[in-house]
Amino acid sequence: MWTASAPRSPRRPRTSGGGDESAPGDPADRFPRRVYAHGDDPDPRFSLANERTFLAWVRTALALFAAGVALEAVSIPVDGWFRPAAAGIFVLLGLVAVVYAWSSWMRTERSLRERRPLRGPAIGPVLMTGIAAAVLLLVIGFVV
Image (tube, rainbow, N blue to C red; front, side, top):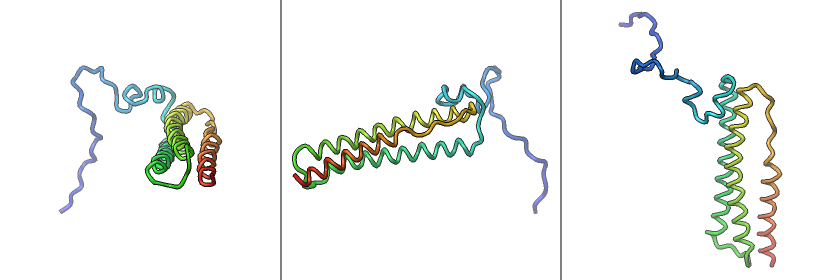
């Protein structure tokens, strides 16, 4: 049989009694501090959208790494140095995408916390130029 009971109070973390411990969610406890030590918590939907964008960039980086590894692992009829050069470009672009993902996430999260305007993505032309160069190398390697 179900009986109504008094509402429970939220649990508080146990402390050692020293009183010098930080409260849950304190910016001093969150990584990276240079992001969370500034401003106020934004609407969680914005932070979660920022995290999804970060993960999308990580997936892009993984795809670029996979393209570079696949070019070296699979035997394709490309002459000379064209194939290793294209593979190197893909791997290098993957590294650029990972670094951009992290720095963009931090910059955007800090802007959200400080209620500043967001900057637009600046990596698109770099990635498109690099991918076009790698594909051009492969096409030339097929023809030569």
